[in-house]
Length: 425
Image 1 (tube, rainbow, N blue to C red):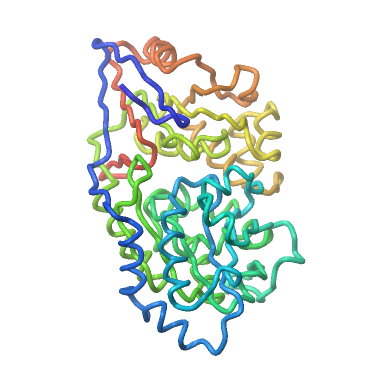
Image 2: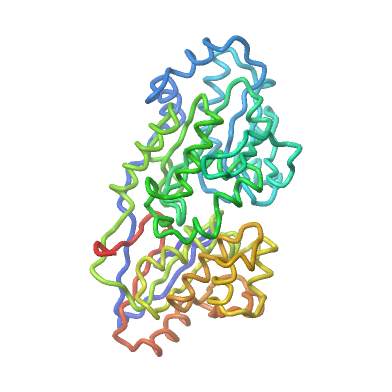
């Protein structure tokens, strides 16, 4: 069977004697002409005026800022931008007034080949592009504090633009409930202090900081509060299938767009299972989501949804970029137990940028053992208890030795495109 892995995928040999269940995503209808659909959506938005009317109401437009997902996200931004730029040009806004701002959050800066992939060669040659830098306070504007006393720092290029547009995609997110919408602002173009405070250890530890939960999610609430304060003139979000093709388009008001696409996700992505599995094989959906171990934690959180206590998660991600994030890597090699790291984060003995990924990882490791199948060697996966396997088949055989030959195995080959859940959880 074919498993999403890197750009090419990975073939997994299934022994007929194994007790295997494979769950594929529901088939979603792919939009045949997505650029045209995007342009139609711009003319017929939800919750706000059409973009042309918004532009006409502005006294003067000298700069348009379009926020776009960075290279770690699989959204086909070049298609969204093709339709959006065509309409902006049609509405009298020329290329020299348009700035593309990559919502990097605390991720690394974009590489040239990634920028070309995100924008397409034509738009790359036409438009000014800049990476958000969460660590550079001089590039941010301070807006006071939230109701939870979180300092609000947001990218100046966005704040000082005459027309602010957000783009992105909506899918379940492992601690913010769902991606998209407000997430383009926080963490996308927010300052380090704002991101760290919103993604605090306490908030990450909340039982509401899970896949598919957002209205009671403390990080969603804070991110939405900040997004409403900062504002967005127009939002365009999409949903995509396992092949990263566009299946849904919505544009207009930030909340209305997000709500519509979240409701679509609820009907297509979540799959009820009767009971947890002994062994769960899961990945991040291939490139670019499986670039590094830091990002791959999200796939392990998918496994967490379906694995029994003391079960086994087999994480299948290419990891061509290695571990990712120096602070994360340092803790991966700290030699501490997962429980020690988790408790030290909660007790504020460990305070580092991006602590949420190691916090979620160690939480999962306290529930189940995790085997890593990737391009990394055994010496490259750290020393906090992650286990190494040369192949998925090897990891399954070792796991069956532990759980018995009748052990129930669940394979989720398409990343967050399908999420198992138990009704009683």
